[in-house]
Length: 105
Image 1 (cartoon, rainbow, N blue to C red):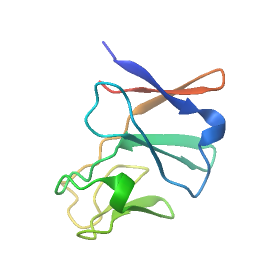
Image 2 (image 1 turned 90 degrees about the horizontal axis):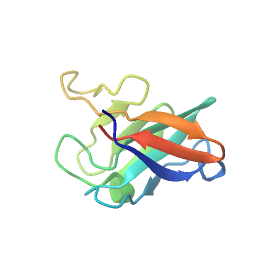
Image 3 (image 1 turned 120 degrees about the horizontal axis):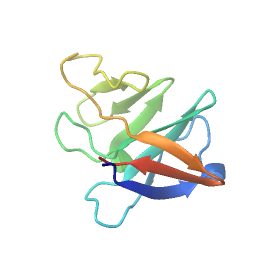
């Protein structure tokens, strides 16, 4: 069973921008961006060392890079460029009218 939560409005998601949204009951914000025509969502924490992507995440083309240690994650696959075994989880995104919803589980 999925835990689907509303994150933001579709119009809030802009290509080339990385934004974090707080969700009640979730420790880290949900990060959202647009790649081509797809909306991508993932946890707001670097899986390498629990660093906030809200404060230290940078969008580099189709990847997110943590400015603290330099770890870069491909947003198409979630794979870390430096350590392929390290994965950034991607949330399933569902558009409900003008809203962006993500499955946290």
